[in-house]
Image (cartoon, rainbow, N blue to C red):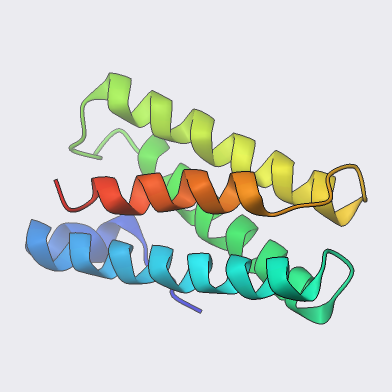
Length: 116
């Protein structure tokens, strides 16, 4: 599992930090894709839900940190996305949603935005 804190990321160059974030998103996307193939009641789904909630919990905490260098509006938008992903993961876990497609799509867009 890829875990990092704002303090660790702040010590690295922005290119290095961005690469670690991208790797974390790559890992999560791969996990979500395995879960989609195996089904929402599979062990892969449980692992993907855990990975998504864990990564986004870390990111939301970092984004909420006043020392985060991103513009406030961008931070707020990313926090909103993270909270949506966590709610979507919970909806899948509870059987209210039967696909990981939306989570995969949103997570892929965020990951691809790290290249910019």
